Image (cartoon, rainbow, N blue to C red):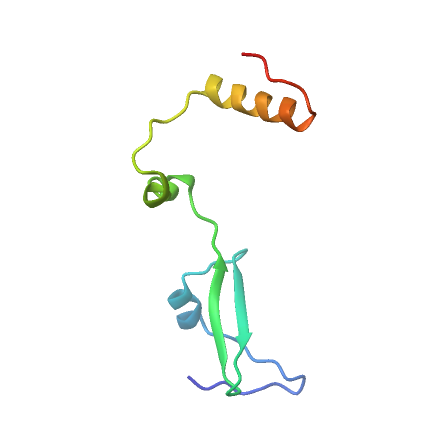
Length: 90
């Protein structure tokens, strides 16, 4: 694809490219300058539903049981106590 530069040195990326990147308003796009005077454009962050993260860490941890809200609260409290230099209640 070719783009014409405006007088201020800007160009507009068309919708086909944005669709190819899978980005929507509010998403971020990264542009990397390469030594051969070319650019690498990629989507850097994409707002996605949490449901898409299901199984994202399986390669690191294997199958794990989900934690209850009480277990999560206890882990947060323990971490806070530890960071304050106090012993967590058992």
